[in-house]
Image (cartoon, rainbow, N blue to C red; front, side):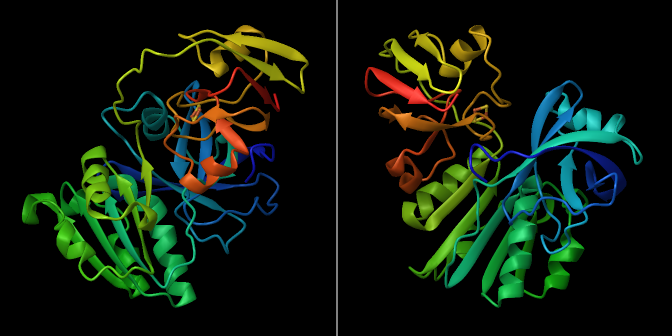
Length: 314
Ligand code: FES
């Protein structure tokens, strides 16, 4: 989905199911039974829950246009969204969603290696189902705290592909060299999970073959050499001055502009904005090298300007 085509819908919670310890799947349907906007494996929805907006990967079947299914972990580190889902959201209630949005799309490849840690299995489940449907060979490794905490094991097994479950309390951490063994140059590796797993995979897989999705922004040192620049917001006719300690998003909000945002860390894509002129300094954790090179869009919560001025579709 492009930065400008955004669906916002109030959907009905149709069903909630325990998938594992601390993991609920939530099925959402249109209140009038209408088909839902299409999505592809790797996509997520923004859920407006508990006074906050959180991203959850779609883990159902894109061919079923009547329902969105999400897998949601009651994470101890939850900033409110997942807690709300687990304690307050119930079938029959309505929830506002935006998206679907996909920054983790399954690209064509001769084969896939999927590596998931914990709840990172949600986008990977939809990808494995797609690969199975398309007849593309894949190897999937899912690591989790314990067998009881690992969701969707039955569904993964039923797909019929090469699936390995690695409960940490029985087998320790994922054997990454084993999971990646024989990786062919025409294969792609998809990984979603906690930061240490992503880091290990980044070190083991050539950059061009790796696609990852993060739960949280990795720690980065503040550069300290940021300078002010101007942003012309072409749609609203406002020109912003973005100071060294301010983001474009903050400057836009301070000027009274209404801008989508959620994570404010460059990992969710909510604030993706079309660039009309100027050279961005991309600092997000979402856009691929190819997307950065075209510079069609940028994440205005973290990215800045490499020239004196940007013109944005704001
Ligand atoms: S608000 Fe999440 S990427 Fe900008």
